[in-house]
Image (cartoon, rainbow, N blue to C red; front, side, top):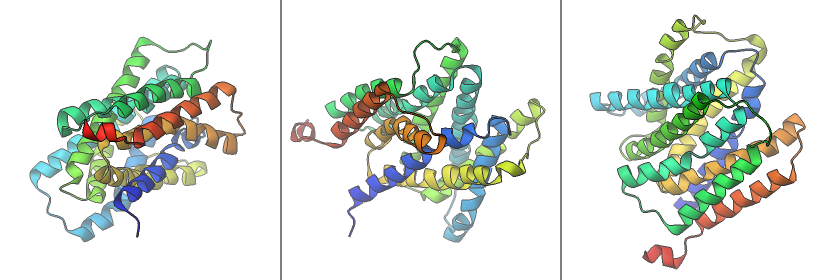
Length: 292
């Protein structure tokens, strides 16, 4: 029989493995589909794929719930993911990746404010080591391209995803994660339509040569992985669970070696070791922390 805590760690492992494929898969779609078109399809597919289970559950959904789902969808799909895509298009993708991977810092902040969670010494150490680690993994010295606006958008993306994480955990105690993810994804996707129309882009654009990659991003990444993430947060604290996002660049680097034939530098390896050390310290709760 698997313990609840181990189950939470398994959910987190699945989540971070799938989330780490985002850059690898998305990079292959760069010249095939506009980022906002991809966001619309991703979250609409993910939401609709889960809808039959939502209907089967027959959960009671109040007007307040619908408003919450709308807010959650706009927060994640339109603001967070939209800001991330704009940050990538206006600046360096590596910098945007660093900023979005640092969202655990905002999760800790919002967890204290909204969930009244305690912050321990190991949380702080993990944040410091994790941030240094992802900078070493992703950042390439001597390259230019960032703008003040791209940096601001990257911070907004990270901050809003952190808020989405905390709000999602808070609501998950009252309603199933499948219902929350499905409905918020569908509503959030619909809310990107005005942006697409403003940019004079086709709302539903599905290039045939990218069919399987887009289906993967929609069904697996924007559907299944979001559920495993929320399920993990129901078992673990939001601040502890979110810390595994520091692993995302490390896992993405390994996947890039496997699928894109890229090489890993000594700096990247050192960054991975720092991230791993931070994660280990975060999940190793000492007796002094428990009594504090």
